[in-house]
Length: 346
Image 1 (tube, rainbow, N blue to C red):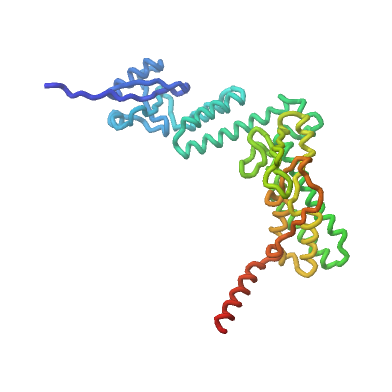
Image 2: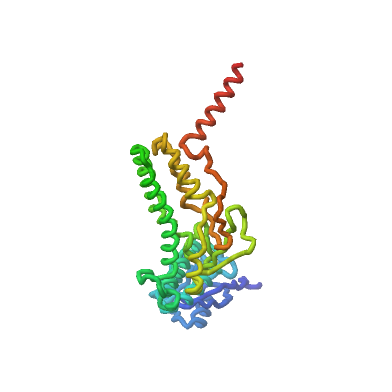
């Protein structure tokens, strides 16, 4: 009679403190422990094995159910493993340079399959890249010449730079109150200005547009800091494909100050006058300030343009009359329904 034959199971195993994985084939857990302890030089007494993914301990009964090439961790008596978060802890406790940490995090991310753990690693990578930014003032003193010492990173300065431009637009709204003669209209404009300022402050003056460490939908640049001209107000793209990286050098940072955040629907000629007109016969509560906020301060109406692509002539674009007052759309729909009922009655 032939004895029972059990096929060897191939697995990948590593130690607690090392990332290197070794391929080992074993018929059972006992054989795996012997081979793994010899390979990784871990004392056999008290040693145990768990899943790399979540730290579940592997028992004799559990071992046969493992898929081939499962990733395992060999632990000594006093060691524990709770999954990928352990690798994160190891990374953060090393004295590696930030670039080395970022590379290690990316290596972990490329191997990770679990959506939940990928999210953890993605957040870690973002934090590490932000940490790398913190070193930029020391590493690139030339770039920071002329920049206030309160800014410790390039991104912090660029966010402030963008916010300063947009705060300037808010100042123009405030200045418009000085031109109003009627006390009642002036009071309504002051209310509107206060509401817009509060909304803008809550959005941190949209400084994220120039922040290369920000989220992709918010920033206007790549992760490396490259900005591309979006073309003049009446174009979909820049025909000359102008681009610049103000993060790259002091010279580029200075030149970038000549690029404009241009309003497609013009701020001075159209938006602010339309807001003033709306407040002549309406209270602030009746005006759609969210619409004016979007036109004045957001990418809905702002385009980043090279100085050559900035057309200073009249844009000849108007505000949407249906958006200026609150409930305008609803009233239009109501009128349409009323007309429909009238037709049916006739």
